[in-house]
Amino acid sequence: MHDCVSSFYCLYLQIKYRAIILVIMKVKLIKLTKEYKKQLGEMIDEWKLDQQVNHTDDSPWVIFKNDYHDFDYYLEHLETKDTSQGFVPDSVFFLLDEERNRLLGAVNIRH
Image 1 (cartoon, one colour):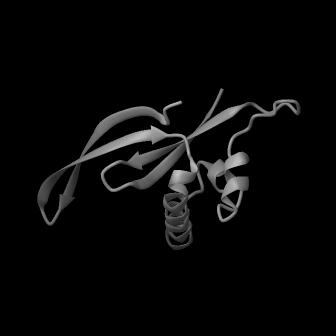
Image 2 (cartoon, rainbow, N blue to C red):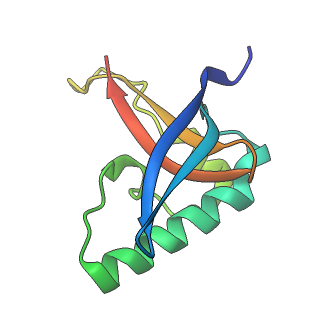
């Protein structure tokens, strides 16, 4: 199965030094695979630092519930599959900047 859920260009304006800069990013939503182990670690570490410095939240919580250093365990337990205890199944997708090969965020969808 192809790991790309959606591929699109992201446009946004950035105001810097009284100038407007148009930034175009090619991003896509992906399912996490071993290919992105390094990028996951970089994203989680940066996110945790931001939480400490700026008191940002840990949403989506599911990407923080397990230690990413044990990547196989992390990957196996990232999504809820067992609904026997009343849990709702979910899917986790990561936003990948294709040009920089960098994970920018994540979304957890319950279904």
